[in-house]
Image: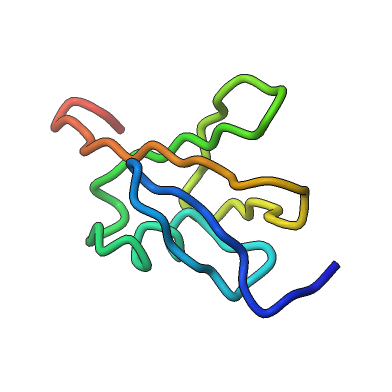
Length: 79
């Protein structure tokens, strides 16, 4: 269901997102990690393994619980 905000964690920091399906670009920008192209992002949803999120791929935050994200700077050798 839609709500006023969705709670997420990025590298341990609690944030509120108002979009139910933000992209990796939006999540990294909200977390202050810019430019978003310089970071990789993995999402951990309860009961699942961490999954890599592509730059313009959307993540559905409407499932119960707090989604946890891990953002890491990309190396020069990565794509």
